[in-house]
Length: 246
Ligand SMILES: *C/C=C(C)/C=C/C=C(C)/C=C/C1=C(C)CCCC1(C)C
Image (cartoon, rainbow, N blue to C red; front, side, top):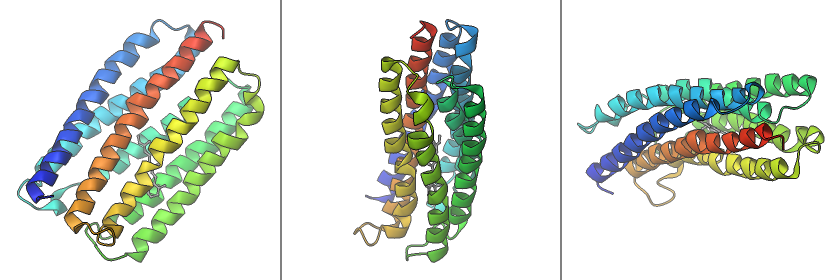
């Protein structure tokens, strides 16, 4: 990929992300009005998440445009991490809230997983800031990435194990969608650690260092579109089923 092609590819995906976040905000705000009071919270959180992401993608896009002269060092990756620090705990909370579990179980699960989400992003940030453009296997980046992955696994353990007990009381339909949601969550959230690793392993894969950085940005951006507006749509679907008493 030439540097110009790489620049253009990331530019287009970031632009698509701005459109997706903005449009889905409008959708979630409109859709929540049709739900009963008790079912609205999860959809309100979806709207909040995509609004926060809309703002950050405008900043991320500007920052990317500033690299047009060829200096990738100008790009401010911190916007992503500030965004994730706010949105990932909200996404975890909304997944638990939409099930309307027993209150005690619910608040324990939310507290614990919001903490894990926060630590996952914070430790990942330390690694990300380390030698952004390093092409050799950079141990500090890898170690912080591994620590971050521990928290990721703890979240998955709760969503696959911890919830199961109270989950049996949900209707068949909701259990079905919830299972889809968990798979979507693993498939989309799993893209982030892979994208994170790309700049480190790009030369090993026969890519240039520049390609590694471009693919990381494309990976993060596609994953954000699926994990925020996409995931929000599934949450909305569960909320509408709950609303009709199922
Ligand atoms: C809307 C943004 C979302 C859902 C972001 C999710 C981010 C992750 C699941 C990030 C995970 C990471 C690891 C598991 C290890 C490497 C560092 C991270 C932060 C990229």
